[in-house]
Image (cartoon, rainbow, N blue to C red):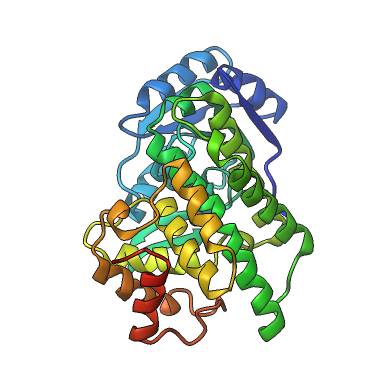
Length: 340
Ligand SMILES: [Zn+2]
């Protein structure tokens, strides 16, 4: 099992960064990696660390391998990497920390997907965006004041990523039954609990509220812990993630990862004979997309992504099995009100 050692989740948590580093018994210089829009927070952390942990602040760009290597090259004489930002920055720094063989501390500025706490990172390769195994953050410092200020769209996307555990676990159960795949009851239960909490609290997830941010953060961290227990992304990634990865390749302008996964969950829940309407309602009440129009993606790409989803990570068995026919894909998208 690979789990974070310390999770701080409160208002002004970034002020605690030096305490966290001390508790982790880290010493030496640090590398603070931030994004273009999160650099102010990176500099604040540098200020909080000043006397005890001298740090270099580095602005990261696109989530591509060249950027991972550039960040890793800045880490050669450092003892730890702190990533301050949303998805991209965390992904780049997480992968660079593996290359540089350094502990990694995640300081998310938005709660848009479970990558802020998990061992996986998304990176753009020539064959499309891929989720690859990196390392679990040694600590997560989530400042609820900062996260509540992020655009609501990001928090709603985070809810979509959590709600996708619903079908991810159903796919995992299916793979256990049909393929004898190894299954963890604990990981599955924890993963589903995160989804249930978000669905049951959907009406309380509102823009710019620290309580909402905290609720979603806890669920994202629990999802990542479920993955840490399982030793794979199985508890939080199934057919709905395959659909989202297919859309990333097919759609001219893809939406956010969690937004696409949420819409994918509605459709995959229907295939599983699950309560897809309850999922749709929860996403709608949170303000997350529930159809092609909300995603800003044309209907035809939704159907194409449904047809190609089975080819994404083919070794991961899901309800998509050998794939849908075009007629079945169109029907699925129409019945669940995703298109039309
Ligand atoms: Zn995800």
